[in-house]
Image 1: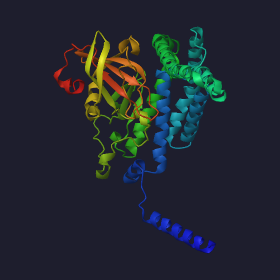
Image 2: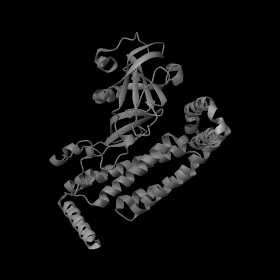
Image 3: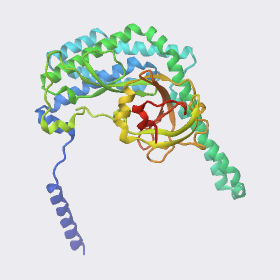
Image 4: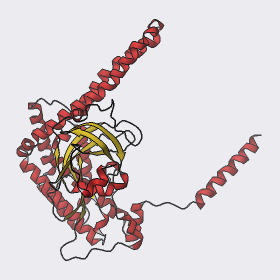
Length: 417
């Protein structure tokens, strides 16, 4: 019997092996681009490493408060940066010059100095630690009583008749963390907004050093890409600043009150763009892989049939406008953004009771950021940004601020049903 089973098992394995051999090997987009342009794998890796360093230094310069009291995160990023820079030192002459600039500007020292001074300012104003750690502690303090109650009701049958008391308590405990998170995040973003100028003033010299090196690094990447005859329009990457030269801005979006800009490298003046091979026409995307949150947004919901006045919304019908995503992205690029002074529940008082916005997966969207968009100084509207859902999607919501607002003709297909 065992011989028969063994024989059948071998035949099954042989069949699977034949199928694997017949199945064509799938190549990633990066591999296709690399092979089409005749690049070495190390060329792609070098570009990715340099872009990581540039993006890290840029983000740190623009939003230093996001890095305070996060020693482990800073240490990991700095260690990764140092590893990449040391690898560049032994390569081409341009990389040796870049490493010399890195050392002469003392980039690690500038980073540490900015972090230390910013943490000192935060402590002097009552911030003692990471917001994320504070949220975890509060969530633990709230959920532990719930488990304790559940244990009591489960172990002791005498409490079974009191289940009608237990369920309202569960509802309160489930809603409370969300309410507390909203208040803490609101306070944190308000703190960042109120102190960003003083943080910049205190760290101006070191921030200029970081930005100067970031500009050198981006110019180095561009020169290397041109040397490799890589079409610059294939490389797209996000930064949080518009302080660098030789870049083309292609899109932008608001991320938790901070503007994020998407760029490609600009060709030197007088240089004709490098032609993209025909088999790569559909790959006009970055060689370096982009995380999901860095994609241009597609999940736009508009609050149609809106009822409300003076910035307070009393009724709406959430309508997915994903088919107009490109147009909405273009409209947002033409807007000037200001942070809304009101809290979300002041704008939609009945949210999660009578009025709810859902993610595409069906979960209730948790709004964490509200911007007022001023389109060409002609028309204002709300842009609500929801916290990333557990399913991985980001939802962005547009709404009128007053039902009596005259909608420009070119925007009616967005804001009307």
